[in-house]
Structures are given as structure tokens and as C-alpha cells.
Amino acid sequence: MSQSVTTPEPITASHIRTILSQHGYRITSPRQRIVEQALLHDRPFTAEQLVAELRNHEDGSESNIGRATIYRTLEILASMDVLSRVIQPGGHAAYVVDAPGHRHHLVCSQCSATVAFTSCPIDELVQDLIADTQFQIHDHMLEVFGLCPECQPPTNGT
Image (tube, rainbow, N blue to C red):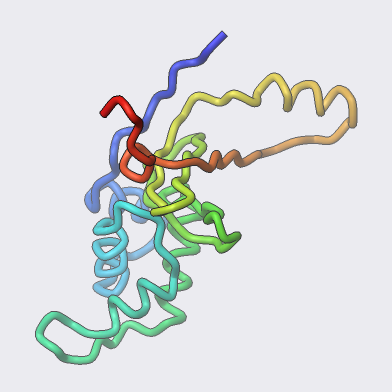
């Protein structure tokens, strides 16, 4: 029996500001810039990529956003379920911007394109593991690696 894959709606800067405010965080100028820069990514990004991107303003002046502020903000956003940590094909952790909620990811092992999906194919497995091991399971992650349509080699018929 196959389950349909449901992809969540994209999240906006306005939605993220609302979530930050609801959790008692101020919307500082550096936080706003970090959120805006993260939203520019349609593929997974690392904290160091964001540090490099935010280092210089478009006008060439040096940014005053410190590395610690960027890392701390990314951790805050991940803890509020606005960012997801995904493991890249090489085993390195990266972030993807996601709408809050339970989700899993398809990750292209060639170009790192990532697609979130909300259907959970392992709920039954989790229940079996609880029964068999007496673990109190509180969360799980699933990342499926493969080739996205753009990275697949052409077939003979096309």
C-alpha cells in the first residue's frame, strides 16, 4: 500500500517573525537579516555558509553580525521547528527552512536538492519498537537519499 507524499507550504519571513515573538524573542536587526538570508536558500545550507554570506553587505561594507549570533539564531530557529537539520550525503549537517510540523526529507545525493514531506512511513515501526524495547520514543528522523529528476541520467527513450 503506497502513501501519498504531502509537501508542506513554504514559510515566510513574516511567519517566522510571528513565531519568534510568540516564543518571547525580540526581532532584532541581525535576527531579521539572518532569517531573510536563510529564506533565500532553496537547498540545504550550513551555518558557515550563512556566516560567509552575511559577512559583507551588498554595498561592500563589513557586517556587524557576529558568528556566535548567527549560530545562536540558527539554533533558536531549529528549536522552534522553523529550520530542520538534515544530514547531507557526505554525512555533514546542514539546515533547510521548513514550515513547523513533523516532516521528513528526500535529499539528492548529487546536488543536495531537498524535498520535505509530511507523511510518516515509519509510525508503525515506532510502535513496534516501543512494544519490543520498552523505549519511550519521543522523536525520529528520516532522510531518503537518491537522485532528483534533474540529476538523473537521461533514459534511452528521451
